[in-house]
Length: 266
Picture 1: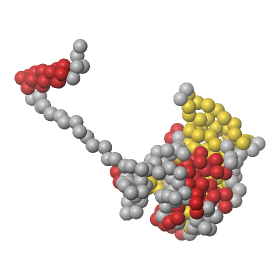
Picture 2: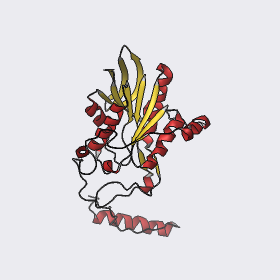
Picture 3: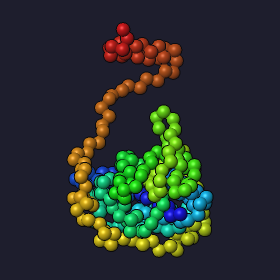
Picture 4: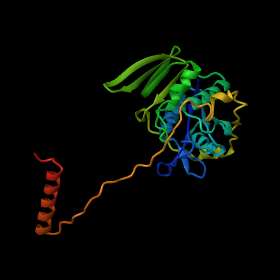
């Protein structure tokens, strides 16, 4: 069985910055990590390999230093990895990104299951996984919380829905997007870290991946961020410290006066 895991490098949540001109996330000079939700996809893939055999390949798109997150995936247990890195794909939206990753996966040969994280913490769209499935013309099952079995060319999954859980049997090959309930991600092992340092990760350009230049990058992205605003806190406030009964009474009276002025008391 061949399993493919698309993963993404994202800025640490405290370091997210946006380019006001392009409307894209600034990734240069920023500390990045594996998208936390992709770790669950990696773990689910490794558990499938342990049950049914085969290989797990991690795939990513980004600048050259994105190879670091791929090495982390290998350190966790992935067999190999592929990176698409080219300035021509910079600024791609979710449509262009899913197209590019789908081409890389297609070029890698046959596959049985593609397992992706539910969403990325920087864009928070949950669109790339289903987008890859659309470009590859394969079934997609989203919000998967459990993989029950693979048998006779079909995969039985349990997915999270608003009313509870839904069981689905889907023909292979297919793409799954998984939620946190799927498994607890394992830590990289020392053996895995050594292997990841020794592994030479192939880096493909847009031309090598056979990408249509009109479908990637800012020019090939049908959606654009036209304006960015930083929210400002405009509310004023007053802090009163109640140190005794007198100051406590004063604080209570001021609070009552405030809510009366606001019309909260009828």
